[in-house]
Amino acid sequence: GDSVTQTEGLVTLTEGLPVMLNCTYQTIYSNPFLFWYVQHLNESPRLLLKSFTDNKRTEHQGFHATLHKSSSSFHLQKSSAQLSDSALYYCALSNYNVLYFGSGTKLTVEP
Amino acid sequence: GGIITQTPKFLIGQEGQKLTLKCQQNFNHDTMYWYRQDSGKGLRLIYYSITENDLQKGDLSEGYDASREKKSSFSLTVTSAQKNEMAVFLCASSIMGTGGNERLFFGHGTKLSVL
Image 1 (cartoon, helix red, strand yellow):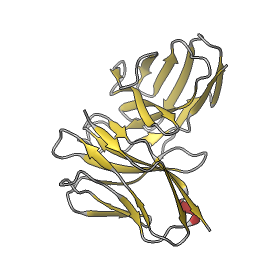
Image 2: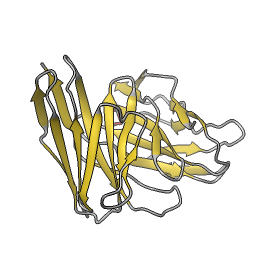
Image 3: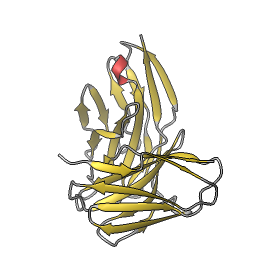
Image 4: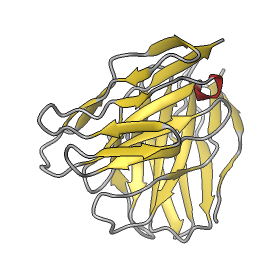
């Protein structure tokens, strides 16, 4: 079945360093939609960015990700981490009916 | 803009008790979802509904019932609460028919604790 794998449960970074959160997926569909959701403490998850197009970079609020169908990956990146980026990040896959979420990566940015 | 309201925000139950969580949305969205959030396990789908009176099981439906009484509301019932169970239940909604490009809007969650 469809699934999403986020290998890092916890990532701790120093402010100013680059961010990379890994996401790989499995699906039978040739044209999946991939999403990143972010959940700050005491808030509900909200959409950060999404992509459908192979090898096209998608950007939003300083974060970017590129869907690579050849490697089934959709890694989230940012050039310079900020304290306010500390949150729980979920990668998700749409199979045209529902969203399947990964287990999440908790990002902590320290001064 | 719209809002998703989940009630109650906190729910404390006893082992074996039947517990009901409610969700209302005013986006006029077709599809509604119930997800369970556990630390380290992500968001797991319990039930979803693509229209009024429709119900579809997710991967985690065992031990739960759901009801889509009308387009704006979707309730979830824990049929028999498990001792020491602790989780957050998130309700979400989206527009149907976008070919997989659904953006989910989430409520703030109901936090369940079972004594």
